[in-house]
Length: 93
Image (cartoon, rainbow, N blue to C red):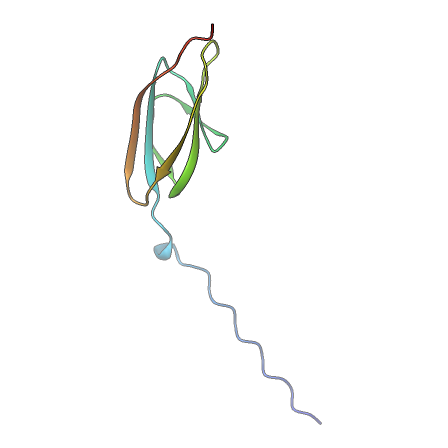
């Protein structure tokens, strides 16, 4: 009788919370107020303060009826706080 094969090695355990990357924090303001979207998801109306964000590049969009939308890419680093204040919205002509 041939010997049975060795059991497969156990998979590495999932990362523990202490090994996870710390979020960055984003605050956004505009004149006048606007709805804020981060990567296509609504995060509320300005002012948005201390929103926890995964580190990396993100797409920020502000919208309000009667005004042109504002879009920009932002980069958030782990453990940092980024404030984008007083974004001016232009009325639609």
